[in-house]
Image (tube, rainbow, N blue to C red):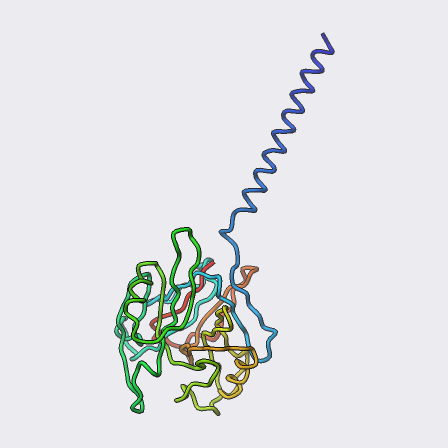
Length: 263
């Protein structure tokens, strides 16, 4: 009788142990598969004069009207994108340079010709084509203007777009220049190197010529400008350790749109 009781108790203990181990493995598997807190952006400060943010595998959008708050932990980079036409107290999509897609809606912004050069030659589109039916992140790229059919398709796919001035086109400095070569400033661009896309800025104030030289040294093939200058350069990013970094102080509330990178 005692032996039977001991065998029964032993069997119960083994079963409980197996169940506990099974729950443990199941818990570990769930944690491993949970990518809600994955950090898809690679930040590199080791390149001379530059800080680079690789956004190739990131979801992005153009947020308009109100800058995302620094408490939004799903936002890992936020920086001004297209130019703002006028310093207005109220927001209007028509005050954003060129065509743009925000929250999967296509808008027409303002256009301008400078020095007799057509708008379509000075400016181009940065486009992210959205997410496919399997949840895969589609390609990013630079596209010429006008491109209405592509923009409509991108809006339908939940992508984004904004219009900006060329900095580098086909491995050549684009002329007319967006900045004088001797201007000392913080600069920021969205750049392509092979099949990777980066937001790239200089760490310390340097001349525009030095900034261009640093981009070429990094291997940039194409680049579009991102709005900069005092107040317009107010931005932030969140690193893989969830540490918030404020880039440049906020001095006014006139920016209208931001490239936002999400976890």
